[in-house]
Image (tube, rainbow, N blue to C red; front, side, top):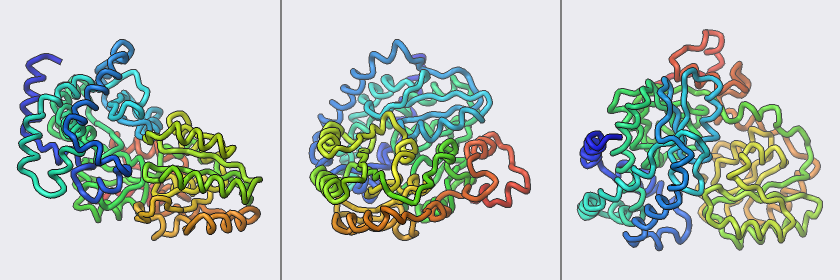
Length: 447
């Protein structure tokens, strides 16, 4: 990247709003749900945000020798910011011609493995230069938005830094389309904005369940999993581009591994960042004591910083530990018969694998964040005692639950079941499925 092009990008980013880019922290309802307990208090010091950026740069420096800062020239560029995004996008590799996948590591501990990468170090260092701009923005803001500048200063700065570097990087690829799997994190929003300004067709592939607090869809094409996601995004605001209901591409290869037993011998416990460690400990102990013949498996969210504590909990309870950074959700679910979790999209993935999804909110919020309770996808468990009773019932009489997921996965029962990645690629390329396939109701472009 030449100095001239970098300066041009810096001027463009100077006119952007960092709060608009960092939607996930600036939108009060969304931020309140994604922030882990206690996280907001230690991040309110501006120096903490600057320090976090410098630490990420230092950790990332050794990767410069082994990873290219720009992908080969390609027609279709696919960019993943986290491991979960990479899992969602990688099935497209087999179906998109002349494509390249690149990593844009948002957080060091959940960075996807990919030889091509966005120049994240340059973007982070560039972002630090916007500290005066962000300080002025914060002074002019009010209410919750004002506090978000200091709570998530690193994300505000990095979003501007990505925008500053994105124009030159994207232009060098020669890509006609840019596909991503996130619409609310600053890095993804900055890259989408730069692509749109360059005339590159932008595509969003849903990578997890969604909530009305998400931003309105601004992509040229949004590839959603089912009607439930489309209804949710309509609540979020006007949809700017076309929509294709394609099912879940990352599920294609796991369809054959769906559970077929009517017994419950293996129980998964999936933990999100809101779940208190002591609550998880009590749950594991209670199940191990009341149902010693049920094998337990504990799986924290890949972004949870309490990993070592959960490793110790699993060991003490005699449970298998599932590392989400190494084992995908579907691989994990293929080994259990039921899964208990709070606010997590893993409930939908469980239902698709015919694993009984048990909703138990250890955090005390009970938000039904993704509408799984409202739409009848999950079985609600009130407390540990209720869980033990439910497990007793399910031990020898576990029902088939895949049908519950139809509203969330349009491919179920259609000609495209198990072929969602192929359908998504066709829509990205611009090919229309034939009339027979369209009648399955999977491809439904709508404004």
